[in-house]
Amino acid sequence: MSGHGAPELTIKNAADLRVAVVAAQWHEQVMNGLLDGAHRALKELGIEEPTVVRVPGTFELPVAAKRLAERGYDAVIALGVVIRGGTPHFEYVCEAATLGLTQVSVTTGVPIGFGVLTCDNEQQAVDRAGLEGSAEDKGHEAVTAAVATAATLRALS
Image 1 (tube, helix red, strand yellow):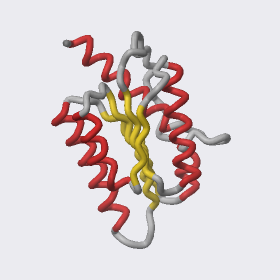
Image 2 (spheres, rainbow, N blue to C red; image 1 turned 180 degrees about the horizontal axis):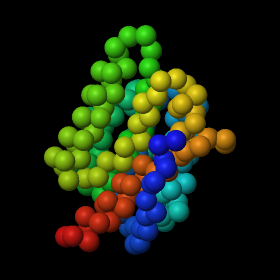
Image 3 (tube, rainbow, N blue to C red; image 1 turned 180 degrees about the vertical axis):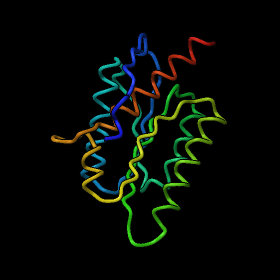
Image 4 (cartoon, one colour; image 1 turned 90 degrees about the horizontal axis):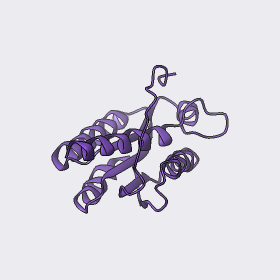
């Protein structure tokens, strides 16, 4: 699994950070797992009431993330899943989401937790969704990375 070698992050004093989660609606089972993992991580960090916004699909994540970043959130978590099919649609959506979310983060200065699964098949997505029996919990990881970065940026101010 790609999670091998992940850092152990220690995040302190994050409870007062404003965090938003924007999540796609496609692939309900996988998205439920990603959202559950994100909520678990936020609760562990003392962030009790994040804003949660749902959009139709992964392609729509960057525009919603940008709006949230512009509204004063300290971190935005983007959750989605794209599963390869028989057309180039997969590559277009994955590239647009990745570049769009990167652009939002760099232009706004707000960390974006990248919880977008780009998988060859549904089983790979389930294995990363933080569901019972999953090998990885990418929703949790996306929150941890974004909040750790937001805390680091705050310390640099």
